[in-house]
Amino acid sequence: MTVKQYYQDAYMKSFHTSIQDQQQDESGWYVVLEQTAFYPTGGGQPHDTGTLKDKRVINVEEVNGEIRHYIEEPFEDISEVIEGQIDWERRFDHMQQHAGQHILSAAFAEALQYETISFHLGKEFLTIDLNVSDISNSDASKAEELANRIIREARPIETKWVTEAELSDYPLRKQPSVTDEIRLVFIPDFDYNGCGGTHPRSTSEVGAIKILDWEKHKGHIRLQFICGDRVLHQLHRKHGLLKELTSVLQAPEENMVSTAEQLISKQKEQEKALEGLKEVLLTYEAEGLPELPKDGYMLIQRAYNDRPIQELQKIAQHIISKREDAIVMLVVHNDQKLQLVAAKGSLPTINLREVAQKVFPLINGKGGGKEWFVQGGGEAIMSKEELLEALTKQL
Image (cartoon, rainbow, N blue to C red; front, top):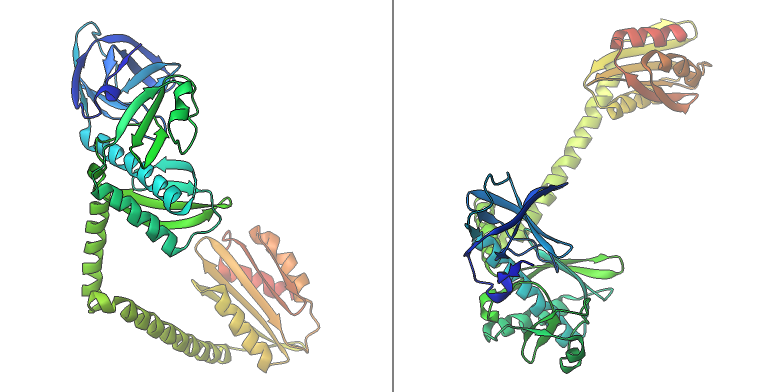
């Protein structure tokens, strides 16, 4: 079996080894090494990346007890000793995040008796699912403060291999899922946990923990947070964003919320005023459309390009509210669609729904409405003028 150097020294950045086997599976080419510092995906922690000689290691998985190092292309010669290089920035980030998760979960357990039931380490932030249905800001702050105090105290993070019989000697937060080769990761007098991941030697190397947000998820609370250098990266990004906003809003940081609220309120007022003006313009437009006298009714029709069908509805409704003898036929070409609105006043006896149902098949369309008001649409397989002519013929 491959010697797991990442358990002997989590800080090992390079090593020399021999290739035991090279094979290909559904995930690609991989090699099995005599010994490795590459951590395989497991225990909630993502795999390491790096290089083996001149080959890029893109994935590491443990399959049936075999650690497979997936490479972009196979080695031509597997007999020589090769050097492995770990992507240390990625590895140390995972060490910080994983240890931070242990600390925060233990803080929730100690301060509030909230149990962590699952954990995920993502590229941007981590999540833990807490076995509670709700959480307050004060609860989150209490756990966060305790976690950061443990970090500042620079407590040691220790590991130990134990047997199943020895587990009772430790106040574990959660029973391990394995019964042999049990590896404990613990912070004395604070947290004892079965874990196969990599961790720094001291809580101080976690740097800091910051809770970002939380939400309800399947009856529990899913909490987002970051640790270590990710806190600095997040602070740098958000500080840059705040600087840009202070420049755009022309307001100091402490007044930014009130300034933004004022702008939003002003925008809503302007939008409301514009809607009022648009209604007036649509009224004038409706009253200015040409009228064509017919036998028993007054026909008003128009074909448009690129108009919201809602505007056509308002134009038609305004006309029939003023003209009891009117029949209105409006058609619009929007993108690859033809849409129509038809309406009539109280005097004409024509059933517009029946008229429209005869026309919709011409454009592979559909629609609906009432006897006096219909709307719908279909494909632009004829011109808007041709559709308007077909509607008029059906009258």
